[in-house]
Length: 469
Ligand SMILES: C[S@@+](CC[C@H](N)C(=O)[O-])C[C@H]1O[C@@H](n2cnc3c(N)ncnc32)[C@H](O)[C@@H]1O
Image (cartoon, rainbow, N blue to C red; front, side):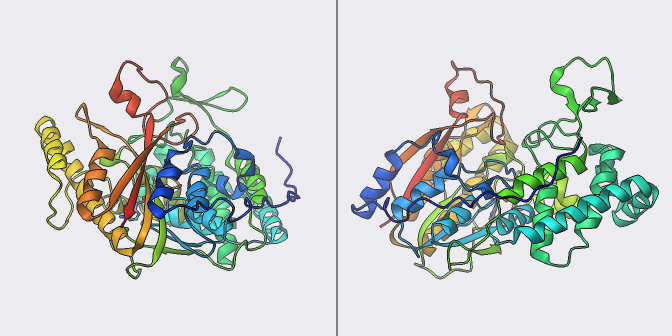
């Protein structure tokens, strides 16, 4: 049975009263006060704007995190930057709270999701287009499956088709392609992108959505060994497979699209909350087209070191459908911060303690050491660039997770603190927050050996406050 596509009649959730939270002390004292508060954010989920739920994203911020720092550390009209914006959580909160949001990312899916989340839409237009997509997709799947298949085979190259065949059943491919053909008929780019986000969101989830992947945030996603229909019939795979974690119940993409569309319709922004339109651009955090001393607050989280979350490996599950070939995505993957292997980077001197740590890890595993050195050099360039664009007496809030490399603690937060100090930042405080791995796309599972200090640290996130004097 399918759900009914009903027009959303939910009122828009208004952001909290503006201004009242702004701390009144000296800038550096405010940073310390702000970081000393509760950073776990288990409360207040009701007042979050539903646009935040449009699409999953690996290591996405809880929206309360950027909101807290925006309200406590900036004024209305101030410039708030996220140079690695991902799904745009910082941008949306800045926009809702009347700050000038600026965001960059090099990931095509991040661009699509972040841009769409801050657009203003008319729900009747989306509703009409949504009905049309669903009606036509259902029709072509039932009447013209061979034609759809032939179109699909013609459209994608051999490698991409191999990828699709490996990760999606034939039935799922057919429905996904039928939906895509209808979405692409929409002329208004903004509206088309809204539906592309809905489409992608039924594939990119922690458990792999309608694909055969079981754990998309995992560096190498596992594939389901046995696939069941919703009624429990075996669709494919070994019937004798008993390992519960390798069994996947597959849902119909058209049904999932309809459900997710209903949800995303409730989260659209119907009237601009601010005259300060967010500025979103493809761009590298290591060199941003921004003037020096122009930003009031940076709130960001870089990728994990050594590809612990592999953005491109996860995102290609939906990007391939949008005509990005497997080959082009594989090339692009090497350019992300946190990627493994060598990169063409300027000679950069790391702080002594960081250099010693990298050498120690390199002694245990050459490749892990090389990746970690690359990560710290790239993060040096990012921090230098953030120092340049930030106004004096302003701060960077950087959220980082830890990594274990070659069995050793990569000491990410301590190393970034040392790198920040070398560049000229004061770092008066580092906050800690506990991670809820069951609810977010994170690199490791939810089980933790509480006797292992190193493992416990993998269940924490560090909120570093860098202050530009
Ligand atoms: C942890 S995610 C950010 C998640 C984000 N805070 C959110 O709430 O969705 C890190 C992001 O850094 C991006 N990234 C990686 N290398 C980059 C670079 N050189 N410049 C800009 N962004 C980059 C990745 O594409 C990814 O979207």
